[in-house]
Image (tube, rainbow, N blue to C red):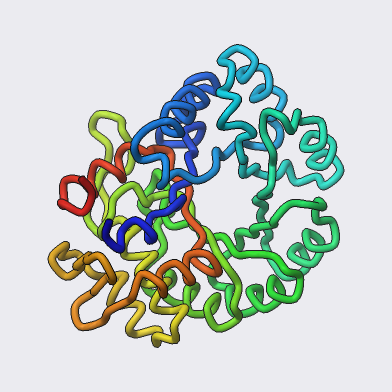
Length: 291
């Protein structure tokens, strides 16, 4: 075992329903079931499903069937924007099959954040996505409301990708406020690099964030790194700058023990949603970081 195991533990939420994959419900469920029983299941987090599609999820699960030893599944659900509708659909779910323990929502400003906090569905952890320009204002409010932050790190167009500077500011703001976060979109590849934006032939290319960059940067932010230090990790593109041993992860001249990694992952850098589970794993194997 190397430090990459605690680093990756349950890191990747599977979001196959969403672009650029855009799979149907049945295919997404079958994929997730296969990943749960595969050799890399330890790196797999929740299945991401819109609350509005929970009835469709239930019907598809009845068709697929489930492994009784592995149920219930844990779901991260995307809010409908209506708290009462969210609660009704979540509570209608058969908890012997799946449990929604994470609810993800969006807010345009502080007023909407406070509304989300006041309407929060009981027994779920709330993640709020918001414009990054407002992070210094909104993140402290999330702390007060015992909610978490969500950052969109990419998309199917180049203008949906935040700059490394924006991501650094977000990570440091979350670390300073002690607000856990998750990321979503655009993190199929480990390191910052130019990649295709979609799987379509002739897709445009863009400079994309890497999930190793983002989560190593998050871990050092958790332990007090400056915004400049966090930014340097986010901009790293050389795989040889990262070294994984049995007891630590080293990035250039900085070292993080497996104990530090576990603590930061558990309390701060929670995970990221990806429409592909196999692609991130394959890239890590290509780097020789996973066997």
